Image (cartoon, rainbow, N blue to C red; front, side):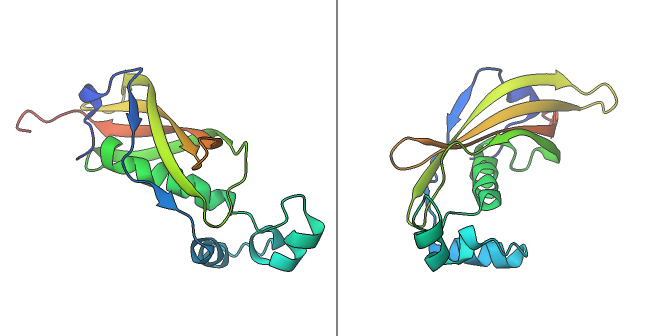
Length: 153
């Protein structure tokens, strides 16, 4: 399903995205290495088993954020986005572990026409990530600049 045009976005709409994703050890290690994040919480199993309350490595929160937003794109902004304007109020109330499966839902919180860019509007989304136990593991607000539906579309 392609993304929604600005004028197709309705405040209060909740989208339950069909893609679910099991987070693997490889995902976490590669992402942490690619982003130069050497935190033992993501890379050192022995440290986590003996020195943390989790007893195992936790998934890099930036990876969680990336999946949370990335999974949402198909049904929200694919082909209609001008730009991502930012993320606010990013929270991770529970950790993710290797082998956890996430699902994402998005709520459209606000829409407003751009004053400086005719034919475009600003949308504020709230993305929520849940693990396989339906526990909230991530939440953020994302602002996007979105095209208005062209006359010939």
